[in-house]
Every structure is written in structure tokens, then in C-alpha cells.
Image 1 (cartoon, rainbow, N blue to C red):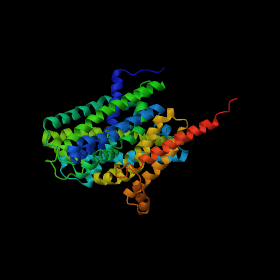
Image 2: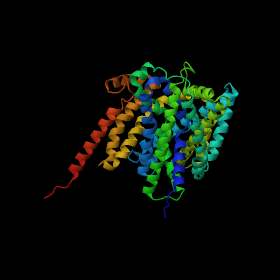
Image 3: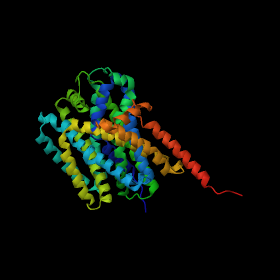
Image 4: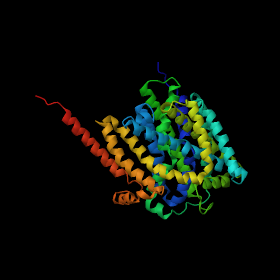
Length: 443
């Protein structure tokens, strides 16, 4: 018999979801965006919230609707296409990009202020210890709700509240002047910057983690699971929005602290040190390491769940160990390198993920959702592939990339949007025509 969750369990699940999403990118990108946006912070942060909060919430809702994660979302794909997309996505949010980034950001903001100078040895040792702890927590997914939702997350929230109080009681300067690109396209710059949190991709895999955590509490009825999953996503969305607004404000008022920051890690580090002094380093270290550790646990758990199903030669625990070792190894390339190589991959994957989520949410009103999905993803996937390969410096796509200039919204980074919408409209019309043709003649 299906159980119901107590209010405390619902809040714990929501806080666990918040902690899973709040990782490396969520901490370092909003301050940098705020620094660049300055007086244009409102429009820029609105764009950032759309891709950094709105789309992940829709992703969790899509998982709740289908009662599972990426495998159920991609059931309308041809089998091989679904497998390729899923493997690429899990590698991106797992051992290739997102998971290593959690360790590198923890190192630069959590350890480097105490040791003074970076070295390959210290980064390697830190990455090893970081992923050893994450591995231990991920090996026991049944305890994830208690470990993350009821223990680590309240500590994380307390530290974030301290930083928020410092931000508004002790601002480090006036709001800075916006860059030229922010004045012209603040909203769209924020929209694109939200890609780098990878939270929309994370939503497609964290959905399984959230659902499993709810199942572990004895909730089995599908409508209840969907309802609790959505509530958890909503709690996480509110928490993330507040964090982004605070960090964006910190960045916009930190022009007097640093002239030309390379990334948001420098901005937040200098701000916290200026406000809290010696204690600031400890506060920042606790915040970053806890946030990144919880995300790493979620990513390892999700990757282990998926790869153990599609490649059962290794068990869940075996795949978690492999992903943890690979993440620890790749983390040694450093933060700036990881940020650079991530962008082309995100340009390819993100628009496809967005289209997948939106069509999934519209499935109840679509006559032939598979056909609509195909006609949406074909142009979106092709355009995204061209943009990603161009960003990676692949020369042979240059002629095709130049043709994209004739499509609307290329400068805004949304050149795939109108072709995707047009494909969806054609899919709906084709589905209706097929349905009408298939109706039996009366009389």
C-alpha cells in the first residue's frame, strides 16, 4: 500500500533537490554575470533565471509526468538515437564535464585560499579525497534523502544565509557600469550563461534520483510520486532563484574589488574575504564544498543508475566507482580549461534537451507526439550540432554556420528556436491530417 509523505519528509526531499542542483556552476556563474551586467543586472538575471531555474523545473516536471528519467523521456526516439543522446548527456553531466567541475571549484574556492598557491599535486590530492567522499555517499543511494536532505543541506542553507546577510548589510561598492554587450543583449547573455549551470541537463537525470528517494519512503502510487516530485522541484526552484539573485547582486557591486576577473570564483572569493575577513575563508570553503559535494553525489548516483541498466556488465556500484575515478582524473585539467571545453558541448546538447522537455510536457494534447518530436528535434539537433562544432573550431562546418546568419535570433544565441517551433507546428498539422484521413467514412 502506498504511503504519504509527512511535511518534514516533503521539505527534506525539496531541500535534497535544491542541494543536488546547487553545485559548482551555480556558485561561480551568477557573480560573473552580475559583474558584467552591472546596471543591467535585472534583465540579465531574468534571462539567467529562465535557463537556470525555469527550464530545470520544467525538466523535473517532465520526469514526474512520465514517471521516470531520461529513458522514458526518449522512448519516442529510435532506439539507437535514444541511446546515443542519453550516453552523451550522462557523460557531459557526469565524468567529462559537470562532475569534475564540482571538485575543481571546491579546490579553488574551498582549499586554495588556505594554501596560497595552486599546484598539480595539491589539486590531484584534493580531487582524490573529494571524490572518495562523494563515492562513499553515492554507494548508498537509499540513504541519500537522510544524508543530503536532512543533514548537509540545512548546513548549506545556513552558510548561504550568512553570505546573503553580508551582501546586503556590507556591499563592497556601487552597482558597476554594464559592458556594451550587456547593454545591447543583457537578457540573452543571461539566457546563454544559464546553460553553463547544466541544470536543465541535470533535471533529466536527477528526476530518477528524486523519484527513487520518494519510493524509498514507501510512496508507490504514480500520481502521488509525480505530485511530490513537482513539489520538490518547486522548493528547489525558489531556493536557487534566491541564491542567484544574491550572487548576481554581489557581482554587480564588486567592481571596486577586482578590475578584470577571469571567472566568478575570483569575485565571490574576494567579496567574502572582504566582508567576513579571516572567517570569510572558512565560510566560503564550507559553502562551496558542501554545495559541490552534494551535486557530485547526485551526478555519480544518476550515472551509476543509468549505465548499470544499459551496460549491465558492471553493477551500479561498479559504474559509480568508474565514474568517480574518471571524474577525479579529469578534474586535474583545472577550472579555466574545463569551462572552455564545456561550451561547445553545451551548445550541442542544451537546445535538444530543451526541445525534449517542452514536447514531453505537451504530449497529453498531441495526437502523434512521436512525429512532433521528430520534426522538432531534426532541425534543432542539426543547427545545434553546427553551432557546437563551430564553437569548437571545426573548420568544415564554417559554410553551414554562415548560412545560419540568414535565420532569426542567431545573434541572441537562439537560432535553433524558430526552426524548432516551425517543425512542431508542421508535426501537429501532419498529425491532425493523418488522424482525419484515418477516420472511417460514416453512412
